[in-house]
Image 1 (spheres, rainbow, N blue to C red):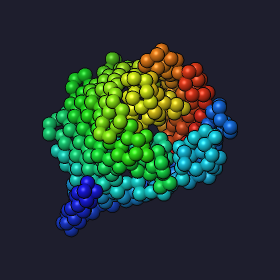
Image 2 (cartoon, helix red, strand yellow):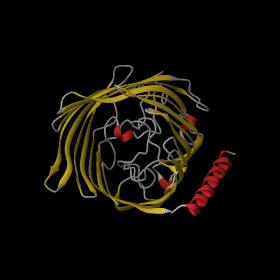
Image 3 (cartoon, helix red, strand yellow):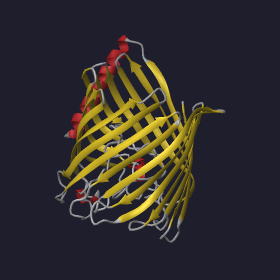
Image 4 (tube, rainbow, N blue to C red):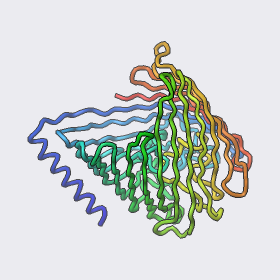
Length: 406
C-alpha cells in the first residue's frame, strides 16, 4: 500500500510539472560528475593483508525547472579498473574490505516543488540532516546512499524550519549486486523529523528519527531504532581574524518496531573549532553509549554518514556492544590560493577510542589529509592509521582522489 500511495503522489506531481511546463519556459541543466580514486588498505590478521582498488565513478543526468517545479534524473556507474580487493560482495573475504562494488544504478529520480515557504520533494533523493550523524548521503563511498521518500521542508517564519521525511526504501552503498545483510535496498517505514530555529548563539534543533529496517536479513531487525535528541551548532567571531565554531548534541535511543532487543542508550557530542588566520584547531568528545553490553544494544547509526566520524579506518561503523567514547584533537592550516590551487589545506586528527562500559581502551588512530582545488577538480590525499589495543587489528589506509563536477 505504501508503494501505491507514493507512486500515485509522484505521478500526480509529474502531471503538475507537465501542466506548468505548458504555461512557462522549461530550463534544462545538465548534471555531470566524475571521480577517480585509488584506495589501498593494509590490515593485520587476514590471510591476504593488502587490498588495492582503482575505481572510476561517473554520474550524469538532467535537471529540468519550470517556475517552482523541477524534475531531476541522475544515473550512476562505478567501474573497478584495478580490483585486487574485497568489495563486501565479490572477491574473497580474507583480505581487507574496500566498500566500492561495481554498480550501475538510477541514483536520483525526483520531483520537487519549491517556494520560500515550502519545499516538497518526492522520489529517489539525497537526504542529509544536520551533520549527517544520524541520516546522511555517505558521499565518500562511490555509490552513495539515497532514499525513496517524500520530504517536506517548511519555513513558516524567519529562522524557523520543519523538515519532515517519510522514506519507504533506503538505497544502500552496495548497489545492484547487494544481497544478504548488504542489500541493494532496505525497505521499511522510516520517519525523520527535524525542527530547527536560528538563535543568537547558533541553530537549535530538536529531532526524532524512527529507523525501520523491515527485513530479517538486516541483523534480524536489530537495527530498527527510535532516536530523540537536541543539537546546538553555531559560530561566534572572536576578533577580525578569529572565530569559534561549536557543536553540542544529546540524544536517546531505544529499540523500535520489530527489534527483538530491549535497550536504551545515550549519545553525547561536544565539539569546538578555533579558526585563526588560516590555522584551524579542533577538539571534541563523542559518546555512543552502551546498554547491557550485548551486540546491537549500544547506540547505532545505520543511516548516518559514518565515515565522517570515529576515524577513517572504519573500525566502528557498527558500534560495539560496550559502546564507544571518542576523544579527538586536530590541527590544520589553509590557503585561499597556493600557486594554481585554491582552497588548499592540510589537516591532522588524532583519536583515542575507549568503551562506554568495562573501561576498555580499543585503540588509537591518526588521520591526515591534504586537499586543494584546480578549477572544477577537487584533489585530495588521505591517510589513516589505526593502532589496535582491545578492538580490531592494526590497519593502514591510503586514498588518492580527484573529483570533477560540471
